Image (tube, rainbow, N blue to C red; front, top):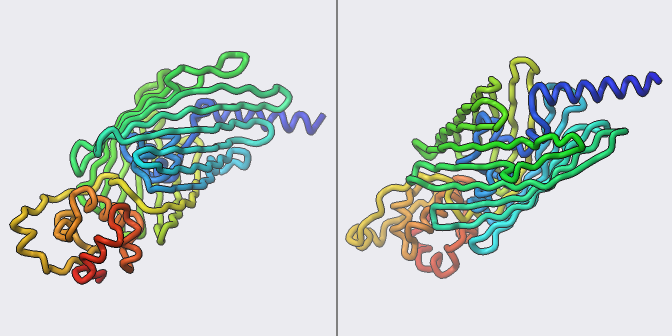
Amino acid sequence: MRFKIQHLLTLTFILHICSYSYASFELSGNQTRYVGMGGTSAAYVDDSAALMTNPAGLALLSDMHATVEYAHFFGIKDLTSGIFASKHTFGNHALGIGLQTFGNKLYREQNMSFGYATHVTDDVFLGLSVRYYHLSIERYGSTGVFSVDAGLIARLHPRVQWGVFSHNINKSRIGSHDEAIPQIFSTGIFCQPSEDIGLAIELVKDVLFPVSTRFGIEYKWLNRLYLRAGFMMQPDQVTFGSGFQFSHFRIGYAGQYHQELGLTHQFAVSLSRVNTKSKSIIKTNVPTATTISSTENIIININTATEAELQQLDGVGPTLARRIVVYRHVNGPFRSLEDFDNVKGVGKKLIERNKNRIVFE
């Protein structure tokens, strides 16, 4: 009897905390960058868990990307969440898969996501994902339901991206009591005043609650360390985080402070390979043909050159220059011509034509 009472109290406590702070399945896909920047992700993503916050972002990531994340909510042992997500690119198309679990054996929420994203143009990306939600409560059984998400990201300006995301557009409900899966709409802007600073503002509307306004800032230091902070309203929460990039690996941390429930910690490890699209990089003026012809012998430091300067290399146009800068922004400085060849579109012929003009320091 004592064992049953203890389990009943534990289950009641978990359900009370979830209902007080989040609706069922509202914790899905809260990756470290999303949390660290105040819950902003409609216009900018940086890992494959984008599948759960705006699937259009899959089209902006590297050819291959995978992430594993763990969160511990409010210091409570039974409130933990785990995420695995992976994404692969096939030409202009991207496919993603994600898994998430939350809770313990008494009360557990799980979902599996499958996503697709594509390039409509060089600056417009569309994504769609299908999720299967599964809810299990000990002694009460389990149930499941499918839902559909959709998103769009558009580059309005070389410094500015706009995104919109719709969660559960088919209005799915789950369980014998027909409990609604949250239906959420969000839209936001992400801009980069410089290559080192990113700013985000977003409006998020759950159909059952007031609009939540969210703000986030990210600062990149030495192409390796990322520092983040954010604030969200409705409910009021302060967030912060960091990330560290080395080679193709990245580790991340995020903290989220709720005024009533306390602090949540979240950790992530990501692996990426070869970036192919820009995430919102400043684009300077393209040099004229006269300028190029008069600077054919100029040495180019590909670790510091702007997009315009990179276009002085033979065979490098605006799109490839953008890819080079993005690759450098995400993976750190190039150390060899072999590293440079990892950028999609470079190739051995381009390197051979320019090898005497390329330096790394």
